[in-house]
Amino acid sequence: MKNLPHCKMKTVNHNFMKASQPLLMLAFFVTVVSCGRPNGTETKTALNSDTKGPGAIHEKEQERLAKRKQMEEKDYSDSLILDKVLQDALKTAGQNIGKDKFTEQYKISPDSVPLSVEINSGYYFTKVNPQLIIRRSAPDNIYIDIYSRIGAKFEKVVSHEQWRLTYVGDTIRDINGDGLKDFVVNGYGSNGCCLKAFSDVYLLRPDKKTFSESFEFINPTFSPGEKIIRGICYGHPGETEMYKYKWNGEQIDTVEYVSYEERDNGVKTGKVLITTGWPYSDKSITLKVLNSVPEEYRKINGYDWFTGEGFD
Image (tube, rainbow, N blue to C red; front, side):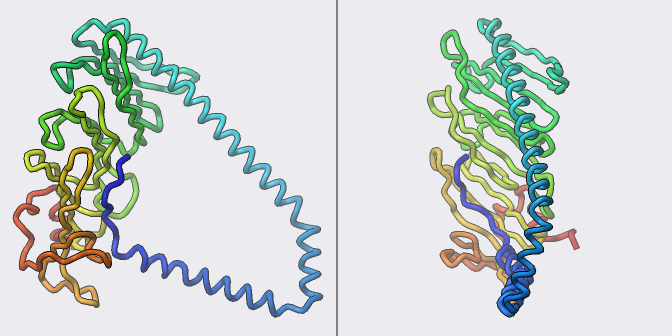
């Protein structure tokens, strides 16, 4: 996955410090008490732990290791099953490789693991090179593999795995404005307080056969015509930022961030800041101070979350 500029929450470091203080105080208290004990007390405590602790600790450790081994064995068994299902799907697709379009769906339960398999082969991305898309839906995860047909064989060009609970769907569309259709997997976070839609983007390269690594965006609105991505950062309504990125080949350039100006006490001034990066970073530079949010941001998905209107 490509490294992208990250939206940050203003309260992360503050909350961490608040959560850490009791732990630091406890550690200090334990240290003081330990240092202040007479030698006889220390020896007695050590003897008690030696006579009462090792058996129970050893038993719990053995139990933990046994559970871990069991989980690893299950994961390994499941991976073998999933690979076998994929190979069988590839074999089916290979038997129909000469067809311009081929589709098949079926359900199986190898070793009592229920799986849904969908095979689609055709000219989904370009009119020149056909692609094969295999989706495997397991109880916990969704697996999507894309192959390009090169001569008389399929070569894998995309492999995507996602937790089923967060999977919303996938689509084929031009995302970066280069005229080529890309592959986009859309999801929604399963936990957390705030707006958390996300998209994983795989760009079709100019060779019309291979794809880029994935780019992940949070709460994005794509504008291919401008080669721009605008979106809402993660945070509470009315307390988060908006971002604007620009495609630069297989790179992402940060254009700006938009946020409400606040006084030291957290009260908004009514002004809007346009900055080069996350507005609370020491490296961020303020480009503009405006009286209102620029019009280009007002129609993006989740704009009401940024303003906080209707969430009181």
